[in-house]
Image 1 (cartoon, helix red, strand yellow):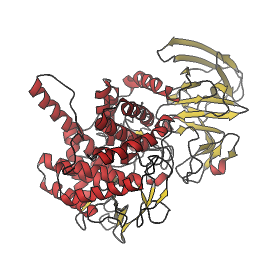
Image 2 (cartoon, rainbow, N blue to C red):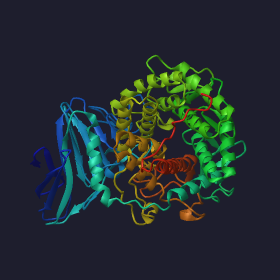
Image 3 (cartoon, rainbow, N blue to C red):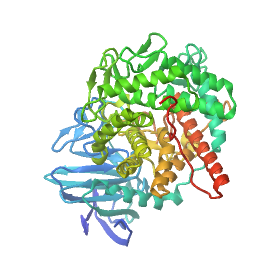
Image 4 (tube, rainbow, N blue to C red):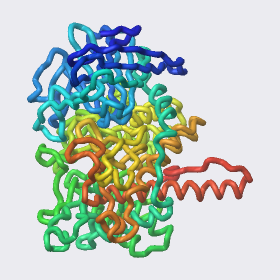
Length: 635
């Protein structure tokens, strides 16, 4: 082992090795590059893994691998099984351990950080080196927390493949030849005690990677909007009874029934289908003069609004075979707050375009039901009984989306409830651990929790002008952006993503539980642009734009494009070995995937129109943008 200041370097495997090093200059965050030269001096070929480590005292460590590992990572009460840190634990069959190793392409930035008793430390590398795919590791033993880079990677104590069934630990190998030498480049720095110290470091790291991570969109924004709208209408809309079906198979002949057995005959009211994406289709149809799109959106929203649950809120999901039912949760008759909140929020926004009294009545019923159930401390609950309205679970931060809905509803009583909820959920953002938004992963931290927090706190800032909410929005955006890929993953040249040159920069890891990249981050495009405007800092708008650039790739403009039909848009791009082999994509079009792309395109185009109007009126080129500044009709 060689010690280089706070850094320890050793090689796992037979030696001997000679290790040399050279430090680079110090950057504003304190980051310094370290170039290692490693030479194998053995007489026979041998496998060896170079390990670079940094340790610090930590009775209760807090970990961060962007997009992959957050503190304990899986709360103890979370029903979804995926890697969890627990001091002193060694239960790999339960995916609970005090030591974890991962391949770097699972991380949105190939970095591993830890905070201990008096500060923290970070190690950063590239996804690949001359020795293969890099590894990121963490370990806690005897009051010491250690973070490591491994060249090449080792996954331990198990390999996670997206289910509760762990796969055996996997280790890449590199066989050194006598006299062989390689240079490995990494970076390291100390971190202050504030867990949010990752934000400037990751911002700086992204800037360093930009030149080597180009994105080449296939379509411009207007064309992408048209493709997404056509896909949503052609493949997901069914006028009987007026739904956006959640999925449609790329291959329409796979079942011999024009794909109908592959298509999911169901619709959530929000989240993976429903009102948010119908509202985007409505806006597009009105702007482009597409009456069939307007009629479809009106029918979907009307169908949902006409069928409220006995408790006064929307239902969770509609199924062709059984009608309206609960959310995706094992808790009987439970409706999920995030899904209900998202449906209500986008219904309020649709009302600005189409002031339909029955929609307004449904919105008010939902708003009133949630305000009536709110706890004095502001918590809006997570699971709500469809018949009685009883709150069945208060855990997590899934109520965050309701903060935005209440803030945008226009009445003071709703705003007061939004403020109370904003105060309650602030602790999740301040603790850098927001969880509970998606129905399908229980209490796992996810990128979708970040989107909900950004939307919520920007809504509060927009209504009140208070700087506290703007600060929370910025902090939430920084946390959300830890899930956003800052580099382009390298794909095999014969994989679909490799063949098409898919650039991952701008895509988001769905969650540590669902390790694939997705486009849901487009849902807060407008809020990130608004945040940049409010702060006078272009960074957040740049991150919004790069995501829209990313998901204007792999966009089928014509039937037959990459084995799909025009407008079919997947939800899963496999940037690592999880669920499917790296380099594949899921051949199912999802309503939300088309809908969220359409939403972001329409938001950007609306902003451009407002900017043009302001320039005509003032003669100045002002950043314009004003989503959700108008009150709901009748409020």
